[in-house]
Length: 357
Image (cartoon, rainbow, N blue to C red; front, side):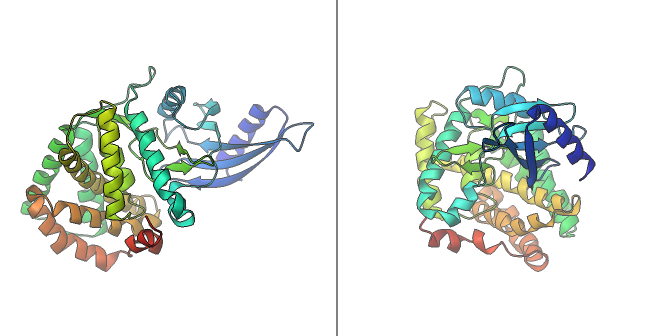
């Protein structure tokens, strides 16, 4: 048992006040956080058990205050986030209600007949989140030009230069700078709402009643209205059929219009969605490369080809990104095809389409 796990075990003993319990790893994530499933047996009534999720977030590496503030605020607004039973910010431990094991991603394979209703529920929940203000004890930071630019630089630094070893000419840098600025301008032209910032199939839980549980929201910001929708519908972990995306996006456009979050027609909304997706996928591809090179989490390399394919397909439809698109097809994608594995089989378009999405 490692030192952090020993400390977590001691902390849980204090929370359960004599009740016995077992603890087993559930998962880690792209950060330094780890998660464990805890089964608590009530003293004097061993048949009465409760299940919890324990979070281990080392305080020197992870600031858990935003998670606590947002979780409490969103729970008060009837958004299904884990209930916090106990937390210790100094030690970096938290005890949360357990949403189970079923990710939205899993249901696209195991329960394809439920996919449409679950995605509709996820987008309805998103509309609710977008209407939220900042918690009183945590002002959500703005998704401003500095942050948008810093995110896209991950693509240039970690994927193109460090992972693929591509040497960029002054003309390449200039072309990237112009493309990034165009995407920043387009993002900042959108209405500003509450943004989860990682709203995708691995951070949404399919609950037994058909509703959606929301996790991993600690990085929420105030930003562009289409950001979370593109995270979900053009997910880096699974490719959904174009007809399904179109249907869901049209419904989301109407729902957010009805909620008074914008007054854009569908054509404008789709443009926002497309270009926001290019910005997000540039960031994601860079992060996946960084996770491999810096953190030794090499499984994320499997998601780079899928993510860059999104960028290529969408950027080909916008004249302002012509030079970028040509460079991507001529230089970056051949390097990816040569050096990186193809996307996992379960995430191919055919796999999703064959399930009737």
